Amino acid sequence: EPEVTQTPSHQVTQMGQEVILRCVPISNHLYFYWYRQILGQKVEFLVSFYNNEISEKSEIFDDQFSVERPDGSNFTLKIRSTKLEDSAMYFCASKPGVAYEQYFGPGTRLTVT
Amino acid sequence: SQQGEEDPQALSIQEGENATMNCSYKTSINNLQWYRQNSGRGLVHLILIRSNEREKHSGRLRVTLDTSKKSSSLLITASRAADTASYFCATARGSNDYKLSFGAGTTVTVRA
Image (cartoon, rainbow over all chains, first blue to last red):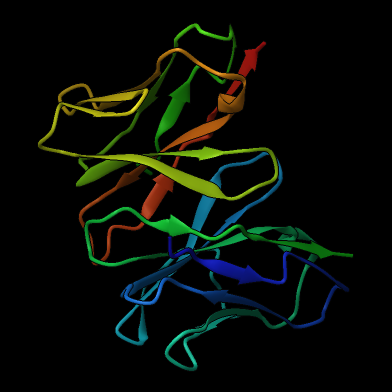
């Protein structure tokens, strides 16, 4: 069964460094998302991406964040200058159509020290 | 905010018993979805119920939706130890792409 994959599974970085989190959505899906979950808290929406552009973003998704779909398969989240409070599990998700369920990847645990 | 809120926060049951958890939300939705998360792992989609549906079944799962009360329930019948996980409801509101708003989750522990 097709699944969303994410790399790396765990990333440790120093404050102020740039990180890129990578995702490979399911191949025929059209809508792509990033969410994050700070330890012990709710899963929070960051950004949605459709037709090669951001369709919606949350207040969390400030100028330090960016997303790209550089080719037909990868979907990346970049954090330009990481802060301690960016430490969280980051989930990528995709779905085939507008009102379908989202399929989540296993997540990347980002630890900022 | 139209995030779902689950109730109870935690639930401990014996294997074989049923587990019921509830979700309330604040605004109109297109659909509501339930996800499971094992400790430290990703989110697994369980079931989606659309706003024009009232009940849906999938294996040992039964979901109800009451849009007049803005609430949903998830019932897991004949629970197993492997059902131990956190369960989240997520609402999708009419917008460009129906992003999901998650609740805080119900942690279910099934004792053998």
